[in-house]
Image (cartoon, rainbow, N blue to C red; front, side, top):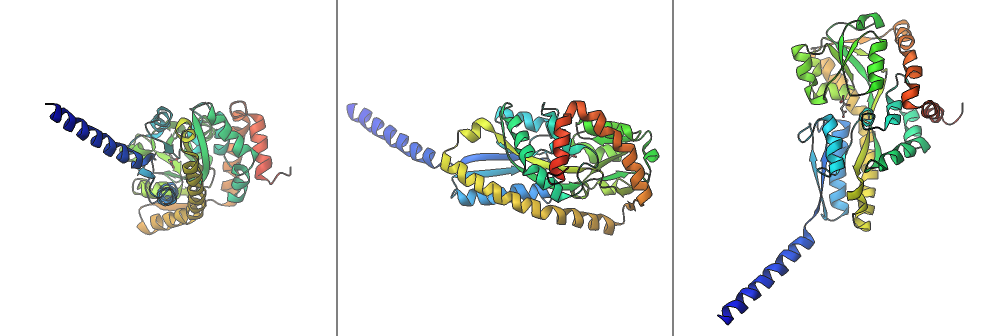
Length: 335
Ligand code: LMR
């Protein structure tokens, strides 16, 4: 009896030692959830981060990437991150407004960014950092800004002049700025999760939408929209974020390696973004399923005039100082 107890105790100790060793080796898992296809700028960025993070930590970190809203849709994903159900996301900048970080909506103001160089000056500058600081109180740490690109506009009728928008139901991300933008054009904005847009277009719940070419192409929007206007009226980009408690709780050396992986993945994601969008335009053109509209200088000017009041109207919400700082940094600090 005593022998048996001794043997059982020894076996138990061995088991405990074994599971202890296994535990010591169990990788830290980062669930990286996103709503777009893998072959988009964000999708590629997430996959690159996975590759580098696992390499630089010698497998001590395992990154699981979940694309295409597999785990969570738009709004739900930020809540999931705050609750710790996922550890990393890259929501579009528009999606931080509903979270209470309204200053992020500055990126959505029509025509606020002349080009990507101006964008980089903002994201790499003082404002980019200050916006990330705002997230800390919400249990979120900002790690990087990733590009997508400039937006185009789709519908089943040609959109050449602001009057063409009148009465159209246009899908938007949940953003007060985007709502104001479509109201200024005389359209009816409809908030809808990204994963539901294709069906919304197919069934006529919405008449059109705005997005980047890479997002439209990978979601097949061009198959259910007869026209795409090359308007470049606004920008879509992302903030890569992590759960603050998770991030702060990581061993310092792991955090350093992950930071390095994120830095390199950011360079990569931003490098492929332009090409992804150009390729998507080509593919949609080749498909023959949709007709592209290039605006004349007069038409472009009419869009700008119609959308000009949006910035002033939204100043109260986004912050006049934020808008001015943005414009100053976008111009390269001189004004
Ligand atoms: C959207 O239209 O919801 C997109 O911005 C999704 C995304 O993350 O690019």
